[in-house]
Image (cartoon, rainbow, N blue to C red; front, side):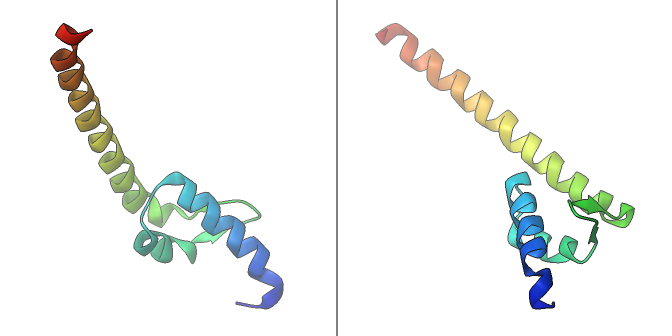
Length: 77
């Protein structure tokens, strides 16, 4: 990476971090990011879709936990 490319690379990494994948996935995807933003090459779609599905599963588990805790706390309110 050229020093002149560093700000763009940092912006890309930050955008990818904001999207939630772990750094090991970002390392894999980073070479496939093009353009001024985070335009991902289509070959990375399956990997990123797996990450999205994992996030959706974690959200569903957390929502279930929240409902369970709310039911437990309801009599105390």
